[in-house]
Image (cartoon, rainbow, N blue to C red; front, side, top):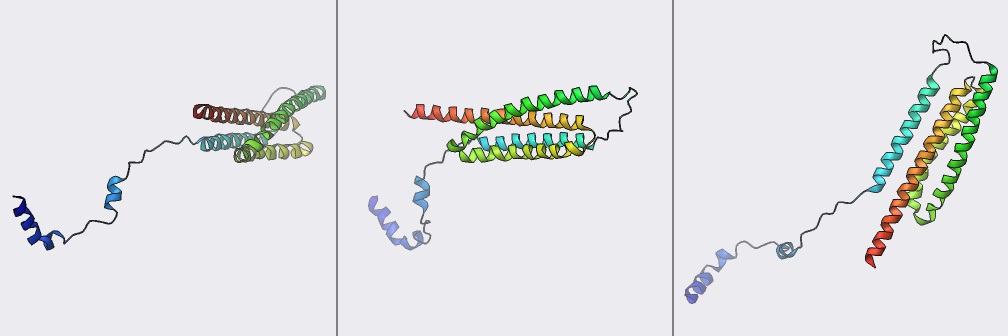
Length: 187
């Protein structure tokens, strides 16, 4: 039986050899299936969070600056100069306190620069937008008669800066913790 099969194959060799397989057929057969890993893209989430904070801040500032002082229909008497100066003093104190906290957190954020310069650049980019908006508010403060609203906007801006710095430092701590866990697992 083996001879009959061999004879048949030899006689019909040309018809069997008419089609050749592809060159890389065996490579494709032996190729191991690729495992798909879901990569947790932290930087994208950070960028989205920072963008949302910046947009929220810009919206708040826009609406505060667009409000006209005469637009409200209040029936009460205007505040006395003593009340205005005391509110301004309280606002200035709040600005000073929040500014100090923001400066401390910025110094902590500066420590990240040497360990992770790419992450630091992204963090600083978001923070710079808030700082620029704050500087604009400072410029308008001197020439604007409605200083109280501008000071409130400045306080909100500083609060947003503080929240952003807290989130950024928290994210950095999580990244640092994850790296330490990976190092410990590798040991």
